[in-house]
Image (cartoon, rainbow, N blue to C red; front, side):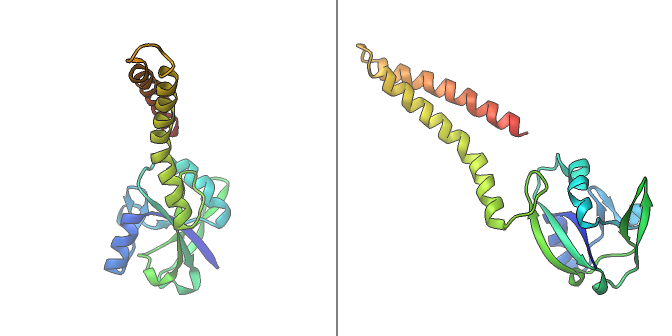
Length: 171
């Protein structure tokens, strides 16, 4: 059976180096919590939304093969549902797959996550450049020699304001 755990990339890298993953959940250790939180596949997205939606560091979805675990685990009741919990440190050898999580908690290839992140970083800059170019072109129709310069400045301000709005909306 496979169960899943959301991990920060930093915690996972440290676990691979040390041979033991001991993060129970975001900001809590195995020692503090007594077990490592996990999810069934259908629980991953709601868990991400509830606990990890505001996290800005890279996150990974660890796929854990329960037959490879060298610690006890069980489904424990949590509210009206049950969730898998690991009662000991997770050996990296029990993790059969790691996938990067995007900003909405979906999995994708590392390439697709990278392309999305670059689009968010470069997109606003391109918006500023396009709007300032349009402003310069419109300003170039002016009789004044300052027309293209003033048009570009207005374009930079408008484009910059639009870029800031896009970035704020992203969070």
